[in-house]
Length: 195
Image 1: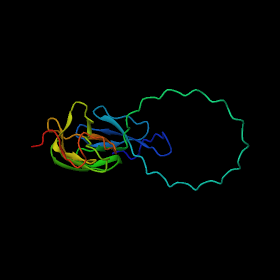
Image 2 (image 1 turned 180 degrees about the horizontal axis):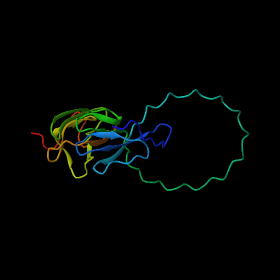
Image 3 (image 1 turned 45 degrees about the vertical axis):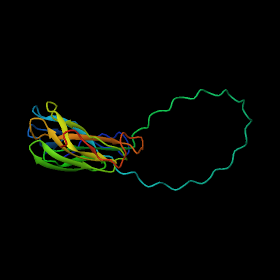
Image 4 (image 1 turned 90 degrees about the vertical axis):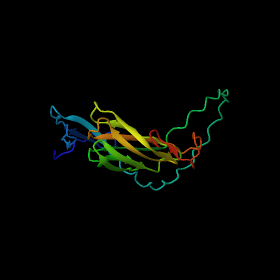
């Protein structure tokens, strides 16, 4: 495994990591500018730190002079109400052995059950039924979940890599704190594959 970390500073709080994953699913972190080997897949991920404390309120400036009253403009047309945006997200990178790396937001509990088979549970993502989006680092493999339940911003399910092959993967979950859900938050919704 490389001794350095390739960092790209997009903002004061964002750090980008670069690495290479070999066919066995092992991650090697590389230095900036270093290339992956021919049989390795390049990957990147980031980890955002917590927001710092709010600074003190500055002193109130002097009141400026009152300007002249401008002419009243015409009333504009009322625009359409936009959809509610997501308010809770969680994402991360999972090694083939089930170890979570480079996560952001709520942290799931992941356990490896067998080759290409993991349990996945997470909570604290709003009030609706949240369903994970899964992506395999090995682009020739398909990720899917099967069985379990979701309700009130939490989900518990099983995650599989097709072919029962161990492979690193990533997850992304977007939840919303809203009462306009398809089911009430007191219901637990059976996910596909549940008995």
